[in-house]
Length: 401
Image (cartoon, rainbow, N blue to C red; front, side, top):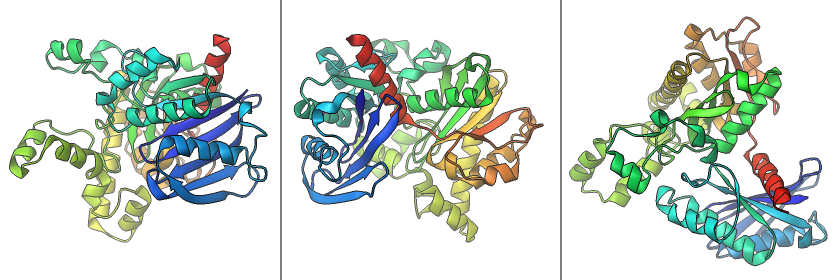
């Protein structure tokens, strides 16, 4: 089976085409600036040169058509016909309580996703645009939704409920849902496989640290707590998101600055985090460079970022009464040598003993960065959310036949 994986944003669309016989990637790419007359399609067929096209792409239906055209192109494509695509898998951020696992796209599922728009206003509407566009371009091809929140549906009430009137949960399902579930699921299993130990026997703390970031406590292979909340705003300090803060700050600042709800929401999601503290960038690479050049604001931004990450690791070690494995993944987690070093240097009380030479190695494979004497294994595991989506899509479509 060949599976097309789609991750649709409001103005972008990422794709990967898998041959599930050996889980190889036939091609991948990105459509940027959807809605503009200078949209960019970057197509990367495996083993061949990249192709870039600039054209007018005003909405997602056209974007998917362009993707299909390039995938079936005589010179640059990897398919003879669109009919070779036997299933489409979509990343959907929020599945609420309705979806505890990935699901086939049908009318009921789409209606539920629309109902959840308020819980993920930046993500779910975009996912629905991707689903609709795929339906129009590939009618009859089965589609599957894979949810960022599904992995965290194993959390107990004590972890997912907020200490606010229960009526708000009963009426509006106000609770912790988490995100990055496909990544936390993938790297926790990959870590257990790397260590050649059953995931059911391990207490793992997974740190998905990129422009967005979250930490998850994985006990016995299931999520028991996670740092993101009802929305992806709670938890760690991120590239442009504030993470945890006193909720009283919101009405206080709204009153003082005469801000609307949408304005304060934009402030917390798009103008906070590393960007706000450093004053220069939301990118950890630029923050690290600024820190190395002696920029005080960059240094403060890095120290706040590292400190909050380390606090979550400590709290989840307490929540699980111990930890066997700590995993770093995603853009920052996989690539920032200095962040991993600073975090691990302050986890000696857990028995973490960092090997600086191993930590400095750059590799696309899972690897250990602690010494043989370390009581806790610290690993760097490249995440692969697209492969999780492809696997779930393949499994669900096969089982539905």
